[in-house]
Structure formats: structure tokens, C-alpha cells
Image (cartoon, rainbow, N blue to C red; front, side, top):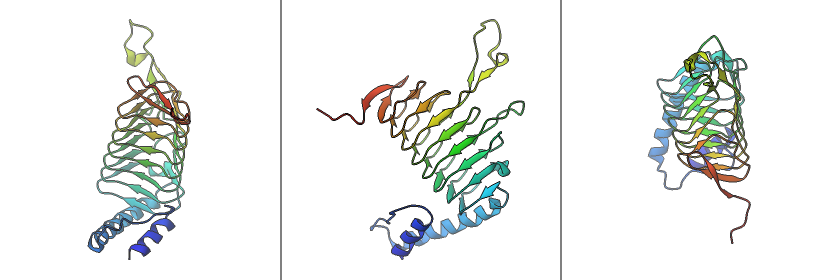
Length: 235
């Protein structure tokens, strides 16, 4: 049975996937049953999406708003209590083998006087629990990107140049955020508007990133600074 399940998971988009040999048949049966229930829930929203190619595993108590703005090209897994508001100018475009876990939020539009731009997510992207992605400017997430628990992305910034005016009447900037292929965003990190996180880079846990992160680098701190170049050989 384990071999069959491994083959099925690979068929759904996870290459070279094997189950842990310590996983018991009883535990595996429970997991399969849970997945089947999630798949049935997924069918309840599949045909309301803008374009749906692949299986949807949908957790409990999820709130998916403006479903017609969502497109996906492969298997997606949505954990319990996930909230997605897809209302935006270009919607949400999701690649293959995407997962977003319990209590995470994607919020594309806050106020209808100015819709968010949109969100594009590549293949093999995993978003852990309790993450928050604010889509006001365009947010682009490449292939093979992983987010630790509690990561936040903000693609908008308030203007506060005039000290005599309330901040909420001075407008906003929306430069957008780009996370390039292969990046790892550590737990509770914050990525601010206008930032590009370079290819195969690592953002250390708890960092606040307000400047571009070079490709193949490790950054960390508040604000985040370069720690090392991943391509440099150690002495």
C-alpha cells in the first residue's frame, strides 16, 4: 500500500516522493481518509474557480471569497481555517503542487476604492501555518519557494511625508514584492513593499526585510542584513 500511495503522490505532482518506513498502515489509512474528505470538500469549490486543473484538497472552516478570480494548474492543498480573498485586478494564478496551511490568510483587496494588483505563485510552493500575504501591489512568488510559519508579506506602504495630516489621507505606494525561485523565508519573517528576494536565498527567522536580497545569499536581523554569500567557499 505504501508503494501505491507514493506513486499516487508522485502522479499528483511530487517528484521522487517516498513515505517514511516508520509510518504504520493504520496511520496511513487515517491520513488517506482525511485526504479523501478534503478532496470532496475541494469539489464543492472547484467549478466556481476561474480555471481549475487538478485536484483541490480543502480543509475545514475555510473562507474562499471571489473564487472566480482564482486559477490553478495542478494539485493544491488548502489547510483548515485558511482565508483567501481573491478580488484583485489580475486575480490569483497558482502553479502545480501548491500548499497553504492552517490559519494562513491571503488578502488581495482591503478597500474597493482601489483593488489589489494580483498574486502569481509558481510550482512547488509551500506556505506554512499562520502566514499573511497582503496583496496590494503585485506579489510574485517563484518556483520551489518555502515559507516558514508566521511569515508576512506587505506589498503596500503608507505615505506620511506631511506631519500635519493624518497618515490615512496621504495615500499609499504599491511597488510590489517578488520572491524568486528556490528562496526560503524563515519563520516570522516580514517582507516589506518594494523588496525582491533573490533566487535561492535564505531569510533567517524573525527578520524584517526592507531592501532587496541578493541571489544565493543569507540575510537576517532587524532590519535584515547580509550574513553570507551561499556560493562563497568556507575557509
